[in-house]
Length: 623
Image (cartoon, rainbow, N blue to C red; front, side, top):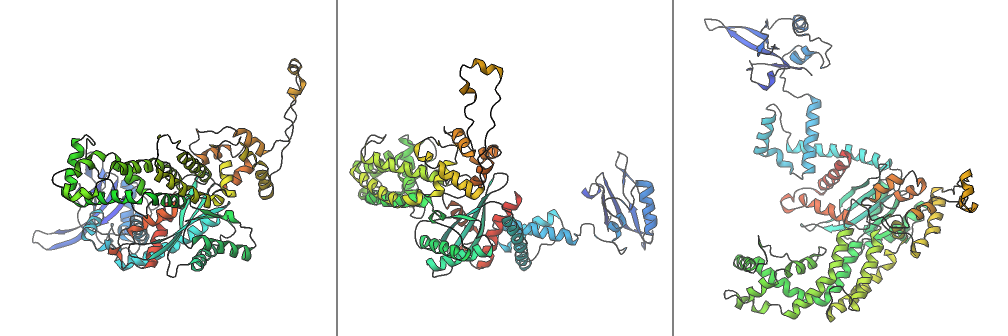
């Protein structure tokens, strides 16, 4: 597209504004030999040919626009009807006045402001970024005539941007044809303020699992089951989604479980729904973490001793250097030595990773205790061989829990079907540990006590883990075999749900044509067998009788088979979007760390809520 510009001063030929495909009308003031100013001239600098020669036709400033238009048309084949608009308006403006070609029109200014808001939100920048001289200098380099908005203007624009995004998000939610699922969690920030986050999940028409922050808000005290349920219900009613919610996944401690019960009772009473215990899904990662906490209570002494020595090593530069030297000399590490991290009560699996990482440096720890410089200081912290044996048996026992937590921690893939598998796996692990049948070959009495504690905690949550949604999710997962008795028992139940909720009708397969070659089959029955009623359920069970472990993307598998199982695929969309864990909510809290921190303490909660939602919604809109 031809670029038309008008500038007040002469532009050298090397200027980017005078590239080969541009037309530049340059204003120039000429002077006489006596030094008096002459009339203002307009010179056309349109490139001609391939030797950097240019049209140098000059016009007096009072030249009419008709003459200029005629020159552009005759000499350069540019007409007023050019797709760029009226070029003379670009040069002179609609009122015939000279204008700066780099000055942005209102539409461009608005687009730039929206882009700046998106940058601030998506990258968690401070609003006073527009006052930063380095950033301002960078923007001037891009366009010397662009003026950054003030901090106040940027803040106001955030509100406008949020209102437009909210309308678009509500429209997206209303357009969802299937059911939706929620995850929620509460959190206390580093500045000791409570927040609640609610994420929404659904499977779109392209069979992609969508995960978006729906609500992120300050949760003022008191934070009990009644205030929690009131906040959840207000969000559900504000977005008018009470009829679409299939389940809520939440953490399994505190006031959340009784609050969800209140939510279920309220929705059933107010909207005549039929929500049951399958509506509340306890986060499997929280369940595992609580199991591990009960189990590791019996090795608290050994764990605290290891924690203490690691804290000393990490806190002293001299000891850390000595530890690294010993690890290198002993051949424990050939590169940079990373001192194992400390366990944290608020983070999953940190005790396991601390013990696991420490074992490769066991020799370095022993040498450190016996070193001349630090033997007196560290003598009382030394771990005995029995202590290391207890930690080793505990590490082997907790390794499965660690892998299960990692497997269930995804928010971009199906995790509900893993709940039953994880439960059965951990129960089997406890039984093998108590009977001494672990692959590691040995255990300790303390770890057997820990195993008993974990098994008791698992049994406490067994009813929720064996809920209807979990069983159906495992049934609909092609990576799991449906041939064993427990899944076969669900066959009639699955058919009933499909018939009542999705209008499944059994299809009668047509009788096969009996041809002449069937005379040689020996048995006529073989040619006319399987003429009975075969519906989608029978077909699906036959297809998934053997687990297909080659499937890496469950939703992609269903996308390819949606035509074959047209009714069953609708139930899949309403089931597999339910989250097996509340990791989506946990991740939202992690992302909020860029907004909720001490150096941004003046940021109002309202702005934090807007930016957290906008950041998530922007990802959704880009897709």
